[in-house]
Length: 256
Image 1 (tube, rainbow, N blue to C red):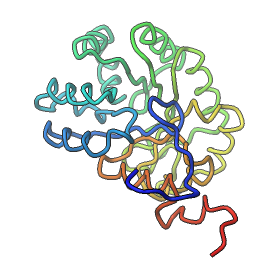
Image 2 (image 1 turned 90 degrees about the horizontal axis):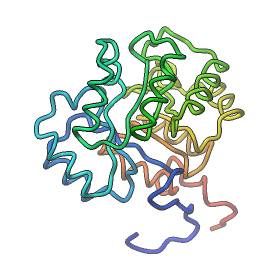
Image 3 (image 1 turned 30 degrees about the vertical axis):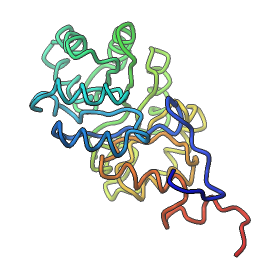
């Protein structure tokens, strides 16, 4: 940091498994990626190339090389996995992971109907090849999954070999964990946390108010995902109690 402030929350250091920040790259150019890495690499633990943007991104090899040089792992969005699966191209998907030397993959079923046992089979198979993140929750706002089902699916996917499970929110933060207004489904989150260790969950929280809510509930080192590149540094200040939203949260008994 650039200067000393007392009573700042202790942040985990990279490589970390808690206090994890997943950034959502929705199509940065190589030059934008270089600038992003130069400015934010200390605060980014992994990058997701959102949904199927990697299919149309120019100079994908060069972009991935920038992230690799910075020591930031990259994975392809779960929607791309689903696009391969619905077309019967699982083996082709695995070849893509090898072609681009990707060490992580996301397994999801937010856009397709996939038998859960079959989803777990995909997780188990991919876990032999890469580190798997699995996403739980639907992208359909009309599909409300009860808390017990979230817990059951998260646990079985972890048991199948997922390294972490991701709580679905989409890039807009208005499905899955959240109501269409963006409000957190508080009872759902709290019930999940009674059964699933918080360090095994990445909560998609693209909106500032959602990030604040999770930091106040779990702490500075909560795992958060779907963070826009332009919001990485603002998020870090929220984690540290250096933005108005959490300014008083970590000060304890300090008196002026």
